[in-house]
Image 1 (tube, rainbow, N blue to C red):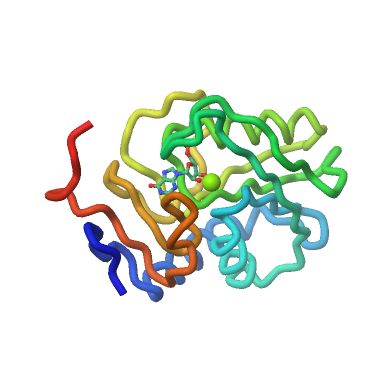
Image 2: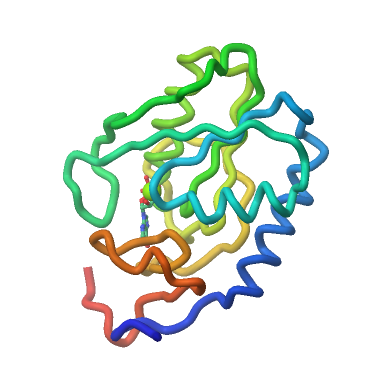
Length: 179
Ligand code: IMP
Ligand code: MG
């Protein structure tokens, strides 16, 4: 099924090979049994799963849930909805998100993890939109750089829908309304 107005961007095989490539890049920095992977809910759930399975190392997992005050497609000011269960003081953390857009989510979550005492925070995203960032962030490890258009599937939603799709779809450039 391809949602109306969208075209296929990445197949299941593309996504898995992207997750494997990112895992290979991260591997030298991972301390088995000690590094904590913190995923940003809800979107990063799928990528976290594939990433740590491709990594095939014993890592800890925790979650953050954030939401933006404006509730739209892009992040306005963020607030923490649900924090960590574990203590990351002194820990090396890998912060996992589905997509990097303005950079505000990564900046907000990095600040939060540092405020909890994380020794280091390494960002990693499956997708990064090619656009200027609105927050000062260290460039994360990136699976795929993509055009600055809306994407859905593999955890990425539009108004809470389409997360379940195994493939990633991008808004058809021709059908996009200029903004
Ligand atoms: P940023 O804070 O602007 O970098 O946006 C990152 C967050 O916005 C991600 O965690 C996603 O939840 C959401 N997001 C940004 N772009 C898209 C998109 O194209 N599709 C679905 N969600 C998106
Ligand atoms: Mg998100």
